[in-house]
Image (cartoon, rainbow, N blue to C red):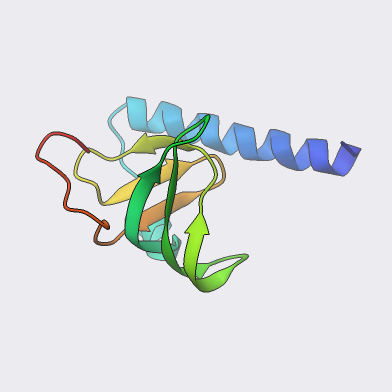
Length: 105
């Protein structure tokens, strides 16, 4: 891994840690953060070594809009299923592929 790649990964981990601490304090993502977050529609949780999401994405900063992506590892999924924090960013969550059962977000 190059020094630049290491620096980018460290910065990403710091942002993730800051977001996790904020959410543990009861602070949800801000309206501005969610407004600029990509929208994932028809999403589902994918089984793998770490949980990730898959679905259609709209407005992703690197990928644009695509009919199918897999996210990086999911670290937090909101109880109401409206947003998620993955390793790299927040996602707004549209309709899931299958309806979520009450209390199983």
